[in-house]
Image (cartoon, rainbow, N blue to C red):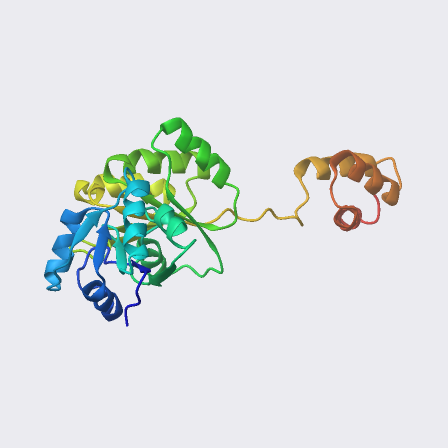
Length: 285
């Protein structure tokens, strides 16, 4: 049941118009007014479900002004819903400013539904306990590459959005900065007629895109495997070489201590390595 003076934040389909919940339809039919990122796009969705409702535009360029209008309606006891063009409001879409202003005095009720990032993750076949949602990276090449540098050492699965006119450049930058061996799952036009889900390495992605230019069209979700944690048990080549040199003239414990001081390697690991080297030499080095 719709409550007075309440804002409902409603998730809408990301492509297929039938990917909307019964609860969302109930809300959209019952509220007094619907605010939409683009009223022209949203009217198509509403018409598909035979919903006729008064609408106002609320997008990134007028969010504060439109939010004040909604606040006035809520103050008058009206109910309102907010929808974006696709997916869940506030997730790489407008909505956060509206919600922050409304919740100071009135109730905000989320109506969950479609989300491109989670849709792609569910079909990526990646076992994960955490991921980092990055949304759209900066459009400037230098800023985009700087952001990638910040992300490259993180151990989390990375989830990015990208537009068709930047997809090839983005993939090239990712390959150069994150490395060609990272696993990549590409979700293209999810839930739509030409939906494509493809998994490859970052190094093979450009070849895949260029093999069929149609695959460069549409909206993209990119899922990239996280950075591998450094192998703390592995002793560096420098430390191994240093240890070998010192073991020629020094007792084992002293050689290990000095090697550790020089290279900052773990003493226990160096001690095990020293024993292996000693045994390889038949009891002496």
